[in-house]
Length: 267
Length: 319
Image (cartoon, rainbow over all chains, first blue to last red; front, side):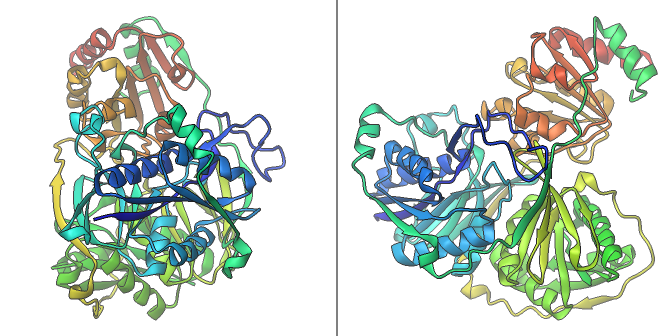
C-alpha cells in the first residue's frame, strides 16, 4: 500500500552552537550561529523514507519560514524525500500558527500520514503535531519510538519503527511514555511525532545531494493560505539562566566523602 | 479567573506529578483571584476522586470505559468541555508524557495558546506570564499567551508537592465520547517496573554514562545503598544498556535532587540541562577535561569502577 507522507522540516539553531541572549533580552544572538534541520524532524524524514522504501509512495517535505529554509528542505531531499513545499513567512512562529499553516498544506497535499519531530529544539514546545491533529480531527501518536535498540540488526537494516497494517489503513506506533512503553494503533490519515530513539537518520550521499538540486520545491506564501498568522504565544523577554559555578576537584574518595558528609551534608 | 488542573492517574493511583501541578494551579489562582478545579478522567476512579478532593479543590470526575486508557483523542473533548463549563481561563497539567500528549489537543479545542513546561509564573489577572525554558534550557523565556484561554504544563520539580487542605466537592462529569468513533486504539503497555524511587521524585540520583561501558553494577550498588533513583545519559540509553525511562536530559527527564552523582558521564549540553537544578552535583570521570566538571560542585578524576564502590564502602562504614 503506497503511502503519501508529509514531513515537517524546521530550520533551527545547531544544537552544538552556543546560544547567547542579547543584552536587552529581545532575542538570541544570531551572529556566528549555524542552522540545521531540527534533529527530531530529521528522524521524522528518516522514518518517512523507510516507510516509502518498504511500501512505496511519496515523501513531501514542508518547511515554514524565510527563504533560507530551502536549505533544510534540500537536506531532506538529499536524504531521499521526493519534493518540497516552502511556506514563506518572516517573523516568529508558534505552534498555533504552525499547525494552522500545516493544516492548509495537508488540505492541498492530502497525505496518508503526517510526521513531525516531537519538538523543535529552539522553542521545545512539543505542541505542533498534537495541535495539528486536533485541527484536522485526526488521531495522534506522539513520542514514537521503538523497543529495539539503535544498535540492533533491525535498525541496521533500516526497518521502519512504525508498522503499517490493516490493509494499509492502520499504523501501529510504539510510544515512550512515563513508566513504560505504550502501543497505539491509529487509523490513517494520522499525525505521528517522533522521539529520539525511533531511528538513526541516514547521511545524505553525494548522488543524493546532486539529485536533490533537481527535485521540485513549491513555494507559497503563508499569507496566501488565509490563516491567522498572528502569534498567540508571545515571547516578551529572554534571559540566561543563573549560571552554576563549578566547584572543586577532590583528589580521592576520602575527601569526596568528607565534602558530602560534613560540608554539603547530603550524605 | 478559574484554573482547571488535569490530574493524572495510572493503575488506580494518582501520579505524584499531579500534586506539583496542583501547587502551580493554586499559584495561578492566587494571581488571578480565581478558584482551582481538578479534572480526573479514567475508568473506576470515583474513589480516587474522593482522595483528590482532600487537596481543597472541587474535583470533577469523568468516569467511563472509553477513558480507561490515556488516549488524547478521547480525553481532549472531555477536558475542553469541562473547561468551558467551568469558564476556566487557565487549563494546566504536569509536563509528563500524558500532559504533553493531551494538553495541546485541549488547547486546540479551546482556540488557546499554550506554554509547555512552565518553571514559574509572573504578573497577575489577565497579564499572567509564563516562564519556560527554550533551546534545551540555555535560555529562559517569559511568554504571554494572547488568547482568552491559556493552557500550560508545568515542570513538576519546580513546584512543591501540594499539601492536603480541607475537602472540595466531588461531582460527576457526563461523558459523551463515542468509543466506536475513535480512530485511536490502545494496543498494549509494557511496564518498566522499579523498586527504586521515581527519578523525578528521588532525593538522590546516581547516573551512569558511556564510561560504564554497559556495566551499571557500581551505579546500581551505590544507588541501592543510598535508596537513590538511577539515571543515565543518552549514550547509555541509546546503546540499549539501560531502559529509556532512565534518561536524564532536556528531552528525557529533568531532575532536581539534593544530590546527583554523574559517573562516567562527560556532560553534553542536553544532559546538563536535565540535572543542573540539582542541589549538589558530584562528577566522577576519567577525563579531567570532561565538561561535566565545569558544573560539578565536587569532581573526582578517576575510574568509576573504583570510586563508586569506595564511596559505597564509606557510606556503609558511617552507618
